[in-house]
Image (cartoon, rainbow, N blue to C red; front, side, top):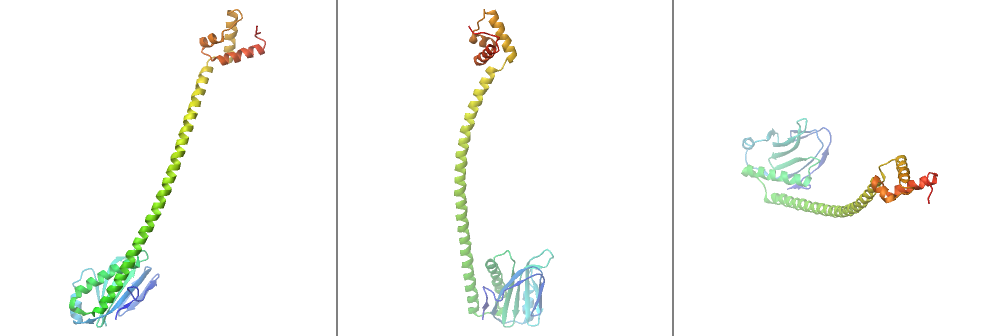
Length: 264
């Protein structure tokens, strides 16, 4: 009879350092993990000595002989203190086979169950005729595994499509933001061009106005008027001294207001 939880029987959360003994095997775990597993009815068809001899040929496993059977321990990884972290244990007894394995917090339980089931079936194929397992036991085990696989794959596709939809929405939002930034950039470019034109105009005016100081300009105007019988040709004067006519007119007005000149 197969006893299953979700492809496993009893499941428990082990925190800090927990020690449990199962049929002569001391299981010590120092990291926080989940433990899951399953059990099959099976009849051992060879002697325990032959079973041990067969198992000792397996690489990368530890074999423990205890009163009621044999335990095959496969350690996949260890924690920083070199203690088993990711591992599985197969208990081979006279009338049943039990399989326990750990599930670290960051690994999907469904994915982990599929991985260890593959390892377990490979182990059973290696044992060959050492055990007689009723077909219904294997059928139930495989049926549960297929159901788990279907749920796991479906979940992956759901997550994938959800991520796709989320990324698609983000892309659309970024496109809108890019278009807004492009419009803003065009507006700033126009404003920059207009400011540059105004700056050029002001630069021209400044260049035209710069040159003689006010005092020097006043003296030049007075000299010109004195040399030209009290008259001044503003345009000719401006060209001669490279001064904008507007500034010459403004200085003439100041001289008149100050009483230095008297208009005719």
